[in-house]
Amino acid sequence: MSSSIDPAALTIEGLRIATRSHTIVGGIDLALKRGGIHGLAGESGSGKTMTALAVLGLLPGSMTASGSIRLADAEGPASTELVGASRGVLQGVRGRRVAMVFQDPSTSLHPQLPVGRQLTDHMRHHLGLGKAEARQKAEALLDRVRVPDARGALSKYPHQFSGGQRQRIAIAVALACDPTVLLADEPTTALDVTVQAGVLQLLRELADGGDLSILLVTHDLGVMSAVADEVTVMRQGLVVESAPREQLFTSPQDDYTRSLLAALPGSSFEQTGEEAR
Amino acid sequence: MTRTTAVRPPRSRGGRTAHPFLRYALRRVLTSLLLVVGVTLVTFVLTNLVPGDPVAAALGQRAAEDPAIVAQFRATYGLDQPLVVQYFTYLGNLLHGDLGVSTTTHNPVVDDLAKALPATLEIALGAIVLSVIIGVVLGTIAAYRRGKASDHVLRVVSLAGLSVPTFWLALVLYYVFYFQLHIAPGSGRLSSDFSTPPHVTGLYTVDALLAGQLDTFLDAASHLFLPVLVLTLYTVGLLTRFVRTAVLEILDQDYVRAARAKGLPTRTVIWSYVLRGASIPILTVVGLAFGSLLSGTVLVEAIFAWPGIGSYAYQAASHLDLPGIMGVGLLIGVMYLLVNLIVDLLYGVLDPRVRLAS
Ligand SMILES: Nc1ncnc2c1ncn2[C@@H]1O[C@H](COP(=O)(O)OP(=O)(O)O)[C@@H](O)[C@H]1O
Ligand SMILES: [Mg+2]
Image: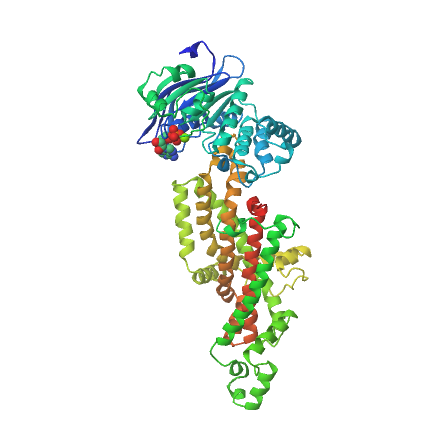
């Protein structure tokens, strides 16, 4: 594809993930362009989450990854290989250069830690910021993801927010150290349909606003059609199709993609994901 | 965890909104006070159901055959009154801090208990602090090394700790340290050539430190060593296994994965995320362990001639000393309630969902 011309923020080549007895991901390629949203679609269990975790080197202990995942440096042509990278390299990448947003913000935020602490601890670690500086930045981040009363929110706990606000907070946590890649694993699946569109719009704005590349993982093609620039469809650990959004939605090449599209209620472009699953 | 009632949203009463945690704390304290009344009733009834004649036990068989002496005795101790009257007299006296006079020591029971309680607390607190530290460290290590050799070794060791009878362990340790190695001091809380440190807390180690008497502290600590060791071994197995389970459960939580995905150092992930999450179930089991530890002290005190509540209870029971028995029963009941109250309040401290329920 065009990845050799267009510099990619993240390049996955021949990624295989396996347990001792099973192959979870059977060798996939995926290039995440700088800036923009790359959708990773596919039914539950097709290996999307494990692919995202492999990028961070956070696969369950029973799994091993092989192949290549290269993270491009923010400037210059150099890149960092993440498969088999040392613990030190991975620690420096996690949260700093590649951040992740999880599916359910009611479980991915620590219920006993104030929001401000969860927004600042990795900032202070990675960026060496002082307490006051980090809090100031955290407040700005909460403003950016449009959490109301950002200053007051810092000393509140996750349970004091609504689901949609919690996911915005989780996104703010992910953005804290200005990563170049954001892995968003089903970020709207656990949310009320009424707030899903707002969170997707936020991701769209973040991708449009600068150098952030987002890998948007979802089993919901409706979500994809709303925000993704490129879409990769996975099935049983393999990529069946990868194409720009319009092309994929108007002239899908693969039978499986077609069946997924056919399953979309009133399948049209402007779906905003209200009809999740 | 199991205390779902605590998470119930509080009703706003009459528009006056106290701080949610204060309201939570107040409710717990009031409940505990009500339960204390219940405890007095239970101890009173149970004590009076005990078969055996306290008069005979206190006076000896000869004197008990003299009706005049018996009547005199019964009047002195209020035993000639109906039970209900006795109970209310008991309650009334209790409010004045009067638990009656022991028929064994002839001291006010309150004074006896005040002397014995710090001795028991000193070994119980020492043991619970030690077992929590050891249990949390070993349990966390076992959870992180789940399935590896060190996990299996810890499992076997803690299982062994759980299955060895306390009294047997105490006897063996006493024999080994005292008779074989000659490194344990004799029984009691202090060697005879030391005098009791000035009373502040009643815990000799603490008081000695407060008074700056380092040698007294060392002597008291060496006397504490064996009883505390036995009690620690008694609870540490339970705690280790429980902490392992709790940490394993937390390690599976999304927020731990999220903390790792933030690139936080492992140390921070364990302290700030994993153990904070596990602290609530761990607190529950520490409360339970402390309760079972209190009952464990009876045997340990007997073996090490430790002048605490356990020894006092044993002595009162064997002499059918009703005021003594009731005093001990009440004290132990109140201590259980107090431990529960502290645990409940700590839930509020550890868990903002309890503290700020709204
Ligand atoms: N801890 C694990 N150990 C072994 N297999 C797992 C584990 N977690 C997930 N899997 C398996 O990996 C496969 C891919 O899972 P996942 O990446 O979570 O799918 P998706 O995110 O696409 O729904 C599934 O078949 C699942 O059963
Ligand atoms: Mg998934």
